[in-house]
Amino acid sequence: MSNALTVTAPEGLPFVDFEREFDAPVAAVFEAHRDPALVAQWMGPNGYEADMQEWDFRSGGAWAYVHRDPSGNEFGFRGTFHTIRENELAIQTFEFLGAPDMVSIETAEFIDLGDGRTRIRGHAVYPSVEVRDAIVEHGMETGMREGYERLEGLVAA
Amino acid sequence: MSNALTVTAPEGLPFVDFEREFDAPVAAVFEAHRDPALVAQWMGPNGYEADMQEWDFRSGGAWAYVHRDPSGNEFGFRGTFHTIRENELAIQTFEFLGAPDMVSIETAEFIDLGDGRTRIRGHAVYPSVEVRDAIVEHGMETGMREGYERLEGLVAA
Image 1 (tube, each protein chain N blue to C red):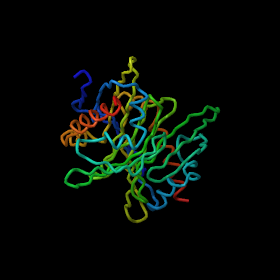
Image 2 (cartoon, rainbow over the protein chains, first blue to last red):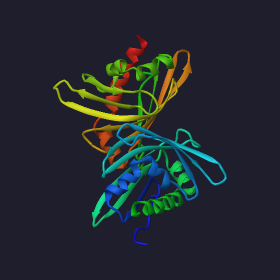
Image 3 (spheres, chains in turn orange, purple):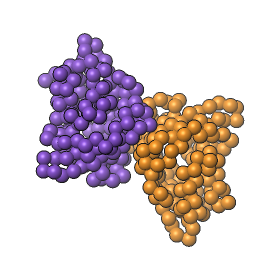
Image 4 (tube, rainbow over the protein chains, first blue to last red):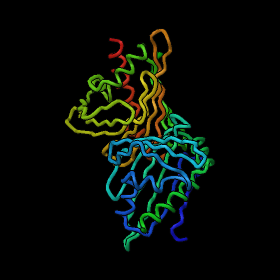
């Protein structure tokens, strides 16, 4: 699959780097991040329902949602949007409420590849290497891969 | 000086850790961070004037200020407050507009030491070790030391 997600967790540094391409124009990929009704359709692992409590997708805005798995377990997440630049950049904080105060900051670039294709390049930074390792071990990559697969279906539609 | 600032930039990790004690109760030290009129009196190196454009010191709020040095040069900063817990914790993003999109995230604990004394313990995380090194080399410690000295005068008053 040419659009496969790549996730890198560099040894000894509290980072996760990721990259994925989409067969869709940058405006469509960006809009799927901006509109909470669209975000709810693709974010997270398969089979989860998202309750978007707040999604103020602008520089200085805040966000919060709850993910519900098929057994009804709830997982809350919240953060702020530090910078949003249309069709270009999102820098946001990210907290899983099950690990309170362990807040990461994530930069996602939206790169127009031409020919109606887009690359997302992300860099997430954690408060420690240990926190980064725990998140990677808890299935971060699977959740991202499944989410981005649904996003691809959404923007191709 | 028993209340001296300590700043540590660990080799090979994109962190700055800092710690300082104050001869003032935690509520006074926290209030000097919450009230923008007080923040303007102590934040940053000596001789700078602060123009507080926004200071919404609550979880999900945004902030921005401009520092003006004695020659009239202006330095803009902005960010978001991810978490604010009264007399306890502040987690915020931080961007110097002269280095756009290089956003750090900083956790500051306000620790009640009893006897009217308070410790601030901070952990700042940068998007790369190189960005961390550049900020340390550009006088981060001096600005913090001078700022905290003025904060000490303010809360002791």
